[in-house]
Image 1 (cartoon, each protein chain N blue to C red):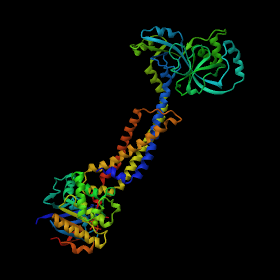
Image 2: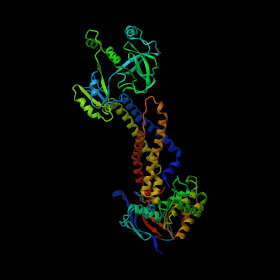
Image 3: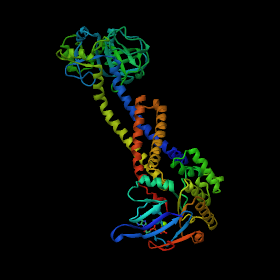
Image 4: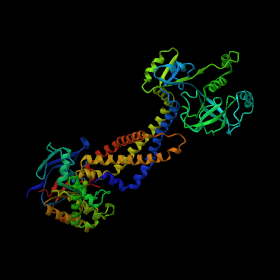
Length: 229
Length: 402
Ligand SMILES: Nc1ncnc2c1ncn2[C@@H]1O[C@H](COP(=O)(O)OP(=O)(O)OP(=O)(O)O)[C@@H](O)[C@H]1O
Ligand SMILES: [Mg+2]
């Protein structure tokens, strides 16, 4: 099975001179299709930076990044290309659901599809099916403010899955949930990874879910300490 | 899926309240434009009511309204003889403080009685003071009242008056000017002087007499030359109406060749009036309107900026999940335009509903209203740029993390 996410010798620093922080140093890491990888480490170890690099919203100082076989940041990528890449290939799940408060659950999911040029009717139909699949079909026309934390997170996952992404990135997706709902979310992510043959990277501090990953990568001071493989 | 509309609908109450406030502001700004229109209309009302194609005035003068002009009355005949001129009439203009005692007065006095009573009236002054713009004209020649609402035009000649409706004089009222009593025989359709005073028409002879009586004693003695000679035949302007195919500029050029005379076409006269009378009002009202529009622009800019700031996380999320910049820009700009459109419509309809109860005349045509609408559109578009800039600077990374 080929790797969907490949980082090779990636480095990233912020600031200059005295104030320079080396957030990531010489990271080599790959994640295969169908694999769910956890990313852990103390605060400031570079987890979010790594996620932002894979999301193509940060440019690495050195090293190469390959997503689904394509080398990103090789000089041929415009901002619009990167957005298109994110839209088509990457799904995002956030600590707080980040749903648009003025759209109901269905339209929040459908919006991601319309950005990808799916006609609105079709997008809504597929969104409802997806919400059904994630067991929040009953709340399809509820506004985000009326959803419980677990429901909102499932709607957010539905949005992340809207365009059948090959790569799913999640930043602390269970931090705002109790342990039971956290397990449900993890089950969902594992299910999606298997069904869609997607690579899933989850940044987490949450030791309750450590056992649910195929592999745990540990970062410390911008370096992979364990699980790099 | 229109994100701008959906977002505003989500906060509908707040949005509508903002629109009401901005609408009132825009309504006041539009009222200023209308008041300016009213000032222009009043300023031009007198000249327009004369329906003159040509104004013949004193040489080197831009009279008779913007500058003083005195010419001999017999010029009228010379003007009337020019090719292309259909009819001509001599006119005098003077602003007079008149008195009137209320309702219809007694019998109209004849000429001798008038002279007799002059002293008497001087002793017992009573009644209300009224500022009138008195026009002296020759009945049957151009320059008379544009239309008679009630009563009749001047026929009998001496000491009759047709007054404008806005003077509030009833038919048959007696008006006293320079110790002479005039009877109101007709009420004309709305016509006011450049300053907004009601117009009153009397015969040219009466008006020349009035001019003589009102001039300072020294000038009076000089003119009278000691004897009982009648006042000189002096008028302020001669107006001419041309036959349909005559060229006003050509006839005016012809008259300018005469010594001591100047001629203005109807359009030139309106130009002179707009410039001399309306300019101050335009500067003042223009300043107010500009300030109001600037305030509106600042308000729109701030509202759109805060609306955008409130949506920082949502916009970052949109960028992260791959929304193109044009989606983000459209979101911000459409909200600005919706705000402007709803405010403009509510402000304009409110103004149109109440404008006739304004103390000043508000004149608004389709052109003014639509021009104002375009201006509001442009203002909103420009004001939204601040919010657009903010939105474009939001980093997708801001969607991640707490
Ligand atoms: N935009 C930035 N500008 C400057 N320094 C940054 C920036 N982003 C991250 N850093 C620095 O890079 C290092 C790694 O930050 P990062 O956010 O990746 O840590 P993290 O592992 O996600 O921490 P946490 O668990 O607290 O979220 C930190 O020292 C941080 O201060
Ligand atoms: Mg972090």
